[in-house]
Length: 313
Image 1 (tube, rainbow, N blue to C red):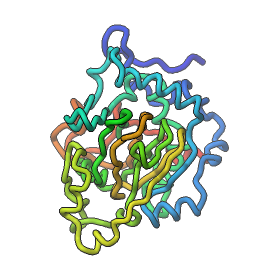
Image 2 (cartoon, rainbow, N blue to C red; image 1 turned 180 degrees about the vertical axis):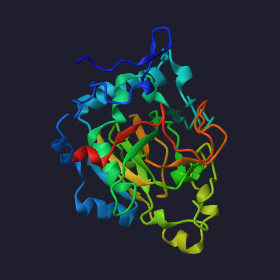
Image 3 (tube, helix red, strand yellow; image 1 turned 60 degrees about the vertical axis):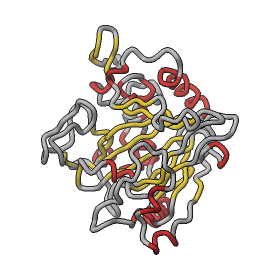
Image 4 (cartoon, rainbow, N blue to C red; image 1 turned 135 degrees about the horizontal axis):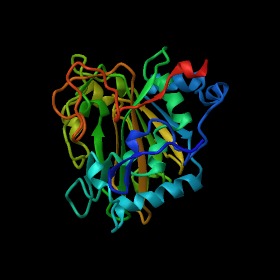
């Protein structure tokens, strides 16, 4: 059987969001139902996630896979951009606007290359996501959107402390998950991702903390809205992800990363998911150019079903 083919966005430029199955570029698609269970997280891992709000150092990719993905990164950090850049939901060559604190941040690249497309369907990601979207209940999983963050050597910028769902309240209920994949070793000196244990329980009348910096550049701005008790609990834990490892975190887990002052780059790709049944809560764009009427289910071309527990049976 030939691999699925994407419809073209522009002449000669495929839009891989039209393909709702892996293309086989990064891994062999699972055809034997019994193999799905090999990707389940252990009970201890699930318990750690719900205790802390995150799960660290999960091996996902080989160094060779990371290097192939980094080749595609050149479409966004190099001089020659991908011809389908208009498909991107967002692209910032430097979101901070400060040349001394450079943060490349992009959304929507799963539409542009086969490797980024297939990452969204990675079995050891989507099966784990089905276990972590809702406590004590395995859920069917839909893809929300991807991101990439690149901090160049010496003057890489920070990503200010935040909760992801603070930016995603245009969807409800809150049943979302983030997977951060390190494409380089992450250390203190190059801007490692850090978490605040237990902060996934920090809310305001059932809502997430308000956004304090839409451009991520004011690292400590979140502290202006924390309670005294939250400030006492604000004790960051460094993820220290190795190349090819990932962290999974709750959509309310407070996390961030300081700038890269080392002589090596710090690059990552991020996958965001929500449980099937999540609905749109806005008449505005959900992502650039993409609308679903308020109250209707999030589905369709841009929000594919990537895993359903029934596939294991």
